Image 1: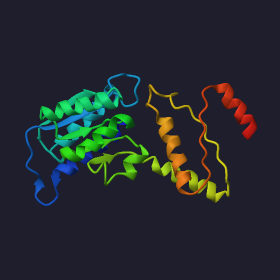
Image 2 (image 1 turned 30 degrees about the horizontal axis):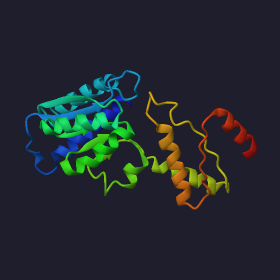
Image 3 (image 1 turned 90 degrees about the horizontal axis):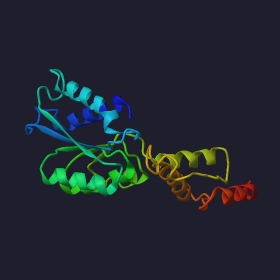
Image 4 (image 1 turned 60 degrees about the vertical axis):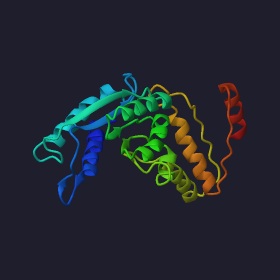
Length: 226
């Protein structure tokens, strides 16, 4: 995640808190943001990588010409570990302790999903880089408090469908390994491929699914299919 991305996230937060008619809304002091990101350095969206951007964003928001000049902003961190269970545990803990007004993250899709669904009952806004297909498809019904700062994977299915129709192609072979980049971004290849698969199905295009347990079986089938 780039520094600009998170600065934009925090900028959006200030827009949510800002009343365009009467200025800054009456806010509790301080405004408390919970950042739920993995602490491991190898993760794309680790706290260590994102922290400098958050600090810059807070400075911009607090500047005399910022949206919340002089407003105290408290950043509380929780380790999501890119886990749905651990992320939810952290979120509940901060909610029970009344230590949050907004969530930044999680950015791992499987960690973001349960919190995104829960925030509608807590009435807590959530900003995330997570981009799973469901976050866009079920935005109004399941994720009304979640604002995505990235393209939705639903668009990937539309892209492939349009490509096939444009070139009059009728077959597509999509091969992926679900766990190859698990340390970087858990099961992102699966989410990507799932979006293409269901996108083709919705457009009435052929989208058979096969699971291969080892490389040898995959290569044998590729020779037959090609």
